[in-house]
Image (cartoon, rainbow, N blue to C red; front, side, top):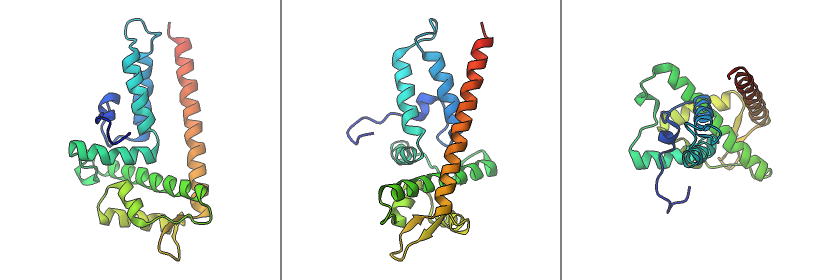
Length: 193
């Protein structure tokens, strides 16, 4: 999303809350894409389908979603911190899991792009999450204790081998989930008249 482009509320386009899980986001996308697809004479709408696709492209990638969330918070005043979430402790845990995935994916990409200089300043990582200092410290503590990240000699954060393995395992799991979801939708389409 460029700085000069007008703000678009992608969460409203997908009809989800800004703190929704990646799974909820994907479910909403598939439902709306199916509804607005031109093959459906009653509900087909190419313009709306294009909006849905654009919103999903931005929000499905953890790093892009984190960047968009910063813009969203500035434009709407929405507070992404867990204590302002009405879904309680379960939502906080899911939010933490999403934050951990965002951090690891960000550090994974950095490691792949610059294997010999893979460190990232804590400020850059903290900015992606847009959370309190205490919550950020919690995320770093957790990822360090799990052995997924380390602090380099220069004081930067870098993903470890265990962290890379975890990112790969998460990616494989997501691909299997998408395949199962796709197969389920195909089966449902064959059954429905």
